[in-house]
Length: 310
Image (cartoon, rainbow, N blue to C red; front, side):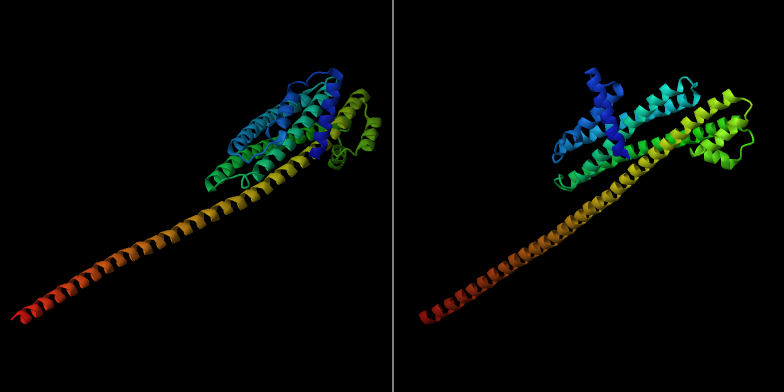
């Protein structure tokens, strides 16, 4: 599992530090930076600056992860073309690099997951939540793209390694059946190979082929494990996509509610304006009625006063 590779890498690195008393080499330094920046220090992502800083650090770490994948692919090619005497050293270097690269992927998964988890709790308002989600979406897409690249690198190396095993076995037994070859490729063909060795006229060359096939069979097992871990990481990222969809729906629902509430408020405001206009009109009507009544009373009083005077 990815955690096993992480533990193995840490143990290897601690052993190297205790022996030398110095920092590890360049690749190890990359992983140290990856683990200690942002998520590694456990800092809060509630504030927007802290969230954006962590997202930027994670994106840089994805770049370092992609660089490690490129180095893995280069070592794969060297391994396929290596002479027998160079193969052990290349294998040792490749194993260490793969352990480091898988540790990088595990750390990145944790950091991207943490970023996704900080989208809603730390956001203040719909606009900030959308900004956070867009940033996480971009970083996660880059990480998933790198994972797919790594899967392709391992799958291509697996296919070429199987072809190499088949060629080496046919050196020992040119008339080998496909079933025999499949058994050898799976790593369970020792008996089949030894039987072929006893009948081969070129024992030295056959023995060399047998040694390489054994090494390739172990490599194929390691590749299957790596591909399984990468598939699990990709699945974990797919779960984050589902969580993102839920977050986006929540943001959209909030926006709909805000728009709906704003519409209701506008309606209430319109009603209030109409009511105010109506009330103002009624006040003017009442004023004119009172004015007319006063005028009528004045006329009546004037007439009565004139009569009394006469």
